[in-house]
Length: 294
Image (cartoon, rainbow, N blue to C red; front, top):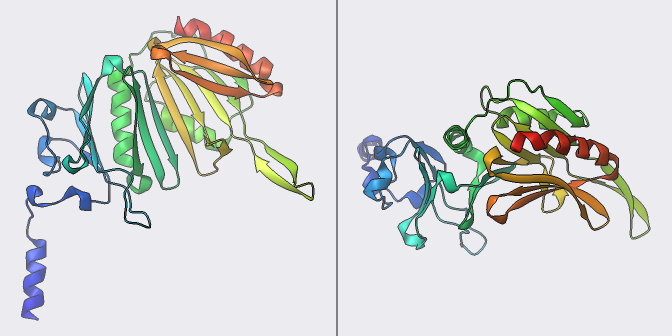
């Protein structure tokens, strides 16, 4: 009994951060000051002057014990975004000036989550387990405030095109918008269930993904539940870009169909499929959105 009591007392004693291997952490957590940085990370002194950060744990092991990605830390300041990996990974530290950040993506489907940052040097994707997604969402919200300027267009009222928003996309829009951010134009193409024959024997149902596109007084937003070509019921992907990073929005032909194409800086683009029954609504949205990005 005395031995067990001694072990319990030792377990409750404070443990120095430096003595803990962050590769054992399984939860994401917010970083608000340098003292909350994982002690086994090598953080250059100049990167310790940050506004907020988040720790992302490494991937769960596969059947062979391999892990797809190491623990990482994302730090945000007024002027830059820094991505650092555990020293054992060998990954180089990446620093992206906010003025060069073109777009951001946040995807979550059940426990699968990721954030990605597009800049002139390419796209950096950071995966994480969504069991603790709140610290990531808080960081992205702060990034939006510091990265995206607000435009004065109070004379414009919101116009909606396409179908009425489903509850899933209503909630996704509400979560995406910052306080006092105003939607100027939105387009919604809902997911639809289709029946078709499998091997010519029986009918099966499949659901087409839904797409939401909006211009606010600050950003261009694209929300979809399309993942690897299929509709995912439990989750969505949010992409955002400041209006100043949007070069053009147009309707383009794509094979036998059409797409709404949003061209961004650095040659990147978003391509949103446009069904035949949404051609008119999509064209009206583009016409309404164009004055907002010029």
